[in-house]
Image (cartoon, rainbow, N blue to C red):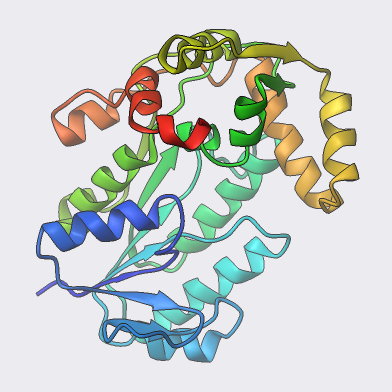
Length: 280
């Protein structure tokens, strides 16, 4: 028996993960922050350890996907304590590429510190460490693409983005048979490393109109985030991603998706073809 609970079920990764588990006939429920219509939901907030313990009771395998918020570490600690108290047997955590509590970069350091929190529970753990998402182009960058100009503060350096559908497929594979993945960490990337200009050219080719790329400084990127009202801590985390990419550290290609799924990762051109309506 392997009863699965999915947190973050309505997000970029969680949505295709739920769909995949449904297709595979998995025994799973989802956790929501408030009661909904679904009879397969458990209700709890990441900020309420007691409610989390109740929600986690009877769960064998817990998929942890935490929001990127200022108190992310505090929320992670709540989840870890509740999972331990509830007797969860295995945790699969969506982390981030390069996660390391000793990292010189702010966001990987946070992700690594959180990974350590879960590892210290003594519960069998599996860490998924994906690179940047292709879905950023169909999400917060979609407006720029529709307007015809993409701005970036990554020095036009190569980055191996991943389609979240591949992350979900990997997560589902592990959740269905977690034991063999205990104690492992998987770096999840696409199969190609492209620059901003190369991705914008693919967008232009598929959409049949010219999309331009304009490089801006990291300082301009930070200023823009501040002007948007983003909290200073979040600005530091997001700016650290630009620093990582600009330094050339985000272009590595991992074989883990290919190994785990037995197929190549979805490439950026296919992602664009599948999402053309978003930019019309």
